[in-house]
Image (cartoon, rainbow, N blue to C red; front, side):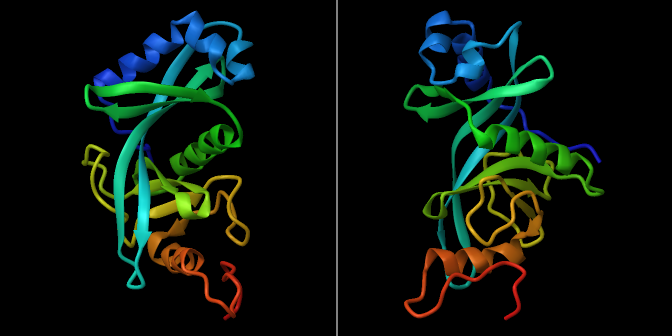
Length: 199
């Protein structure tokens, strides 16, 4: 099934393309692979980045849009990513970065393309657990900037994932959210639950 990638705001894309075309911005970035890339670099696969601010005991969650992330491709692979942020003047380029999340995002997107059901691709960050997931949202008609994880949506933890949560395994939100709730509110006498372990 085709994976739906919501269109990024035009100013966000323009800001990334401007930064990519700036030798100063590329040279000052802490991304050796981007600086060493041969040939033209392109900004692809814009993904809205949502942050999961809190998880309640009932499993309800609140998310907020914090930016758009673009994979920077050179040749046949992603060498870095570009992050944009919302400022009082609109969307603006924030920074380039590289590291394991770039390759992991690309891998998770390929996995998602092989699923039988269509999804809209987003990123969901859980700062309290230092966790980033590919959020596969069931409503493909939305613009990608609003909404919260539905129980039937899929979350694919990106590598490196927190201990006990396997990376690149799709989980229904209803399955993963209770584990995240326990992790976010650790009990004094019990350890963190491990996904898939017997009760």
